[in-house]
Image (cartoon, rainbow, N blue to C red; front, side, top):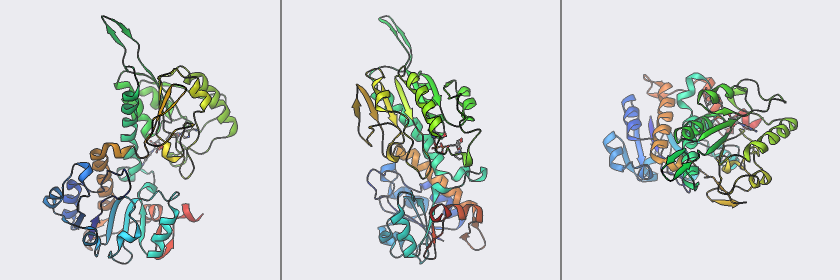
Length: 373
Ligand code: NAD
């Protein structure tokens, strides 16, 4: 098949969907690789690097021409796909709940949209899971940015001029990003605590050397929750959680929030009143800021100061680690394509379990049950 890798056009998007490493591996499987000129520039990959790996590099029209597959980080606009094979497959992060118009445009144009973030959470798809690979880096970056924004040090330091106390960091939401945030804050020397609605995270928090802070009076989500995801909590739970958080948060210097619910706005975890209870100079990093925010008043890509507390959050956190985020994304794409490679036909043939989970559109119709239900 002809696989086209397009350059990203979204503001602030620095990542690329293939690297020289994955280009080489895909070519070895039998694919013809075409990469748009400049696609890797923010990730420190030059056109020459792609050519050396076996791709041809050209402008958008030349790249997309006759493509069977198009790979993007964020889904390309339908107009940018002119010249691709009819019914071509486009694998990217579609963010379909928020980009319904784009999904409809793909359907009308007859392209097969494959949404990488709908990858089912099953063991064999773990290596294809873009949400995990990117959240991991995001959790790391969130702590670094919070540490950099904080006017004090993270570790305890005993110096000749006196002792500096360790920072207290609190991680809210202990999924992939939260676990990495805990580990990173610990490495920097903070005293770390964490909370989640899923009871299974309690042991994970402890095993990273952090303290679990949990609502005990109202039942949360036992175990992992469906597909590993949280759902919206009852009002009773939310109230108990708010009380618990209020007393804990007033003693924290750094808070990292990571709570997301697929297809819904992010849950509100921190109110203005709670922010006011924190020590001036404290820092909150809201990893959910682009999904509506866990923190009252957070604004994407701005440092908001309220009651002396700085609230930070990026609209696209992994894009702040372009090279590694691209390397992991590209491997997610490669693992996905190679798992379904039919060597005899030299084609990618998706199976039902994964194909049906990630396919949004086909043959002029929106076919994904998460969108049609
Ligand atoms: P996520 O990004 O959807 O959410 C982040 C965390 O916020 C989750 O732990 C969630 O429980 C928590 N949360 C939601 N609402 C909350 C609230 N009101 N208060 C506090 N916390 C709240 O989650 P994620 O990082 O994608 O991962 C969730 C789980 O799925 C993890 O256990 C992870 O290991 C698992 N997972 C499995 C696979 C796989 O098997 N292929 C892949 C990825 C993740």
